[in-house]
Length: 107
Image (cartoon, rainbow, N blue to C red; front, side, top):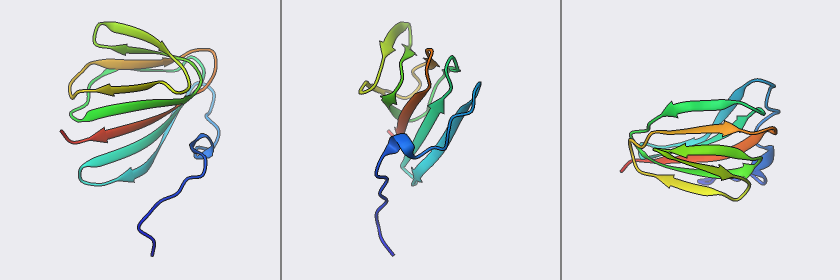
C-alpha cells in the first residue's frame, strides 16, 4: 500500500458544482491537518464563521470576495490567504464558479 495521495489536477477533483450550491470533498484528514476542496456555484456564499484551527485558503479558479475580520478583498486564481484561529471570515463567489483548497492545521 502506498503512503501518498496523488491528484493530477485539483480543478478536476470535484464532480460538477451544482447550481445554487456549495460542495466540498475532504482530500485528507489526520489528527492535526485537514485538507478540503470546495466548489462554490456562481453567487454562492459561505457566511461569516470562525475556525479553531489555522486556516489557509488557496483559490484555484473563479473570482470571489473574501472578508477577513473587518477587511474585504477581491481574489482570483492563485490567491492565497492564511488566517489565525478564531478570525471571522466569509467567502462569496462572483458570477462564475469558484474552486478553493482549504487547509486547516492545529495551532
